[in-house]
Image (tube, rainbow, N blue to C red; front, top):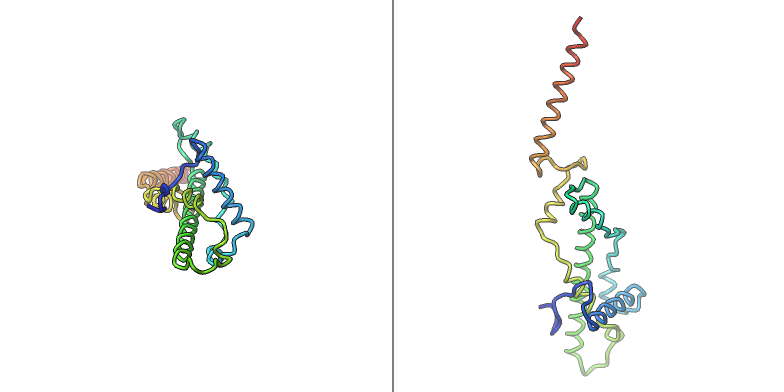
Length: 187
């Protein structure tokens, strides 16, 4: 369990009023981070949230798959980029949760002292929950990391069928060129 009495993670869509408040609190937390309202030294080490240039728009790819189609190389690369961005966001949220837990622990240990400026900021509860809701299968990540060869094509070693088909194409191409050369050199 990642929180005191909190749930491990939250879904992106809200099912009731409290969940709407939770989403709004997450927005407020992110707004505080992005507007540099947080005087926490550890936050500076952590850096800004890894907000990607990736647009996360996968609807066309899902429609293609639902229609029985197959994703091509650029689609697969885009899926990989989206998953990579999601993993970075998840890791960043995990780090944020660790900073928040450490801050709470230090605050509890020194309750008799006056709070420093570092302890007078917004509490981060909702963003870590969103981060923990991101889960990507290790097998999928491994597959995508090894899906392409050095030339940017689907890997023949990772996908042996593709390797065999490429070898067959090379053999047929060589046979055709050999036949054409023989025809061109005959009287």
